[in-house]
Image 1 (spheres, rainbow, N blue to C red):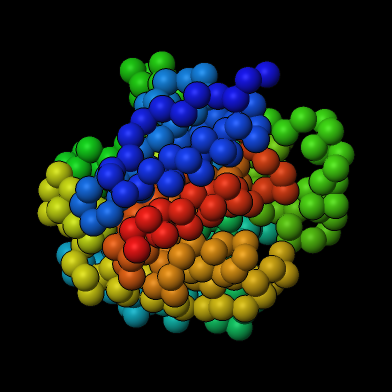
Image 2: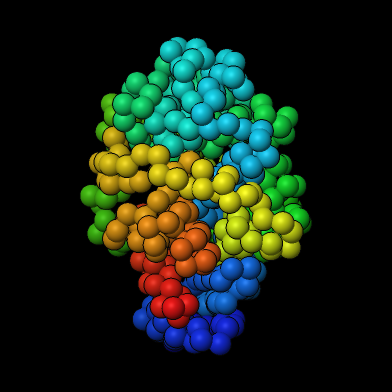
Length: 376
């Protein structure tokens, strides 16, 4: 197989980024990826390779949590959401089972002890929202809130969505679409209408050889552990399920958003700059959601993590996003979206073929380093 052609543009001074992207494509003939970087309000890198259209929308898995964080920043900036208020002040039913004092800050930084519900839940509950939100409101936390943290990989989407509904009267996806994405031309979607289906490209699943080689990293959880209850229990592997029509239509923000790399980069740039409209949130609101809230070893995975409000903070080498001020989110398939205020950069990366073990694609981090070097 021949190396895929690299398409797109780079601003003067960023030619080395194109060279780095071309080298990655030459090293892997199956490589299909998009990479975009903004410096301030201006795109300085916008590249793609592989046999697809450059505006292809890909499932970005947990990278879509960035849209949750951005929407929270918007509401904090508007004075509609106070991170130190009790969740029950906005969502009274949430006070059940000892959660009356849980703050928004703890809820949205993976400290609330609600990564699942007793007995688990199904895909229909996740897509329908209301039933799972009621179960989460009634659920006793699986640890005392604040005593530990563990990635609420799916439920943080439902929790944030219900909170946004209580504050605004609208679902999170609608607030994001109408108040964030549409005014700024941000190509990130929490639910894709049929008229955009022609742009949707499914992710390629791992091969049998890759699954065998990474068996230890992706072995199914033991049935009596919390890990076995984190994702919907009846949809099979999440990396396959997100390719189906129903999750694509609904677009649960925690794991089933779709985006282009340009859309991800533009979303993060728009947090701080006039990108088609005024910045999404003021500097103080952005600083609040980006601020480190918790760090250490995740209670479930045992891996080191740092979290702001929804957003990940850099942890080298696995999430070496950039400066100490960077924040963003990766996705299971390898995608990533990042804002780095220190360098005034924003990045978006999507990749078609899921790499194992599941994590931020190391090639994305390499390209981010190349942009930082070019930006000086």
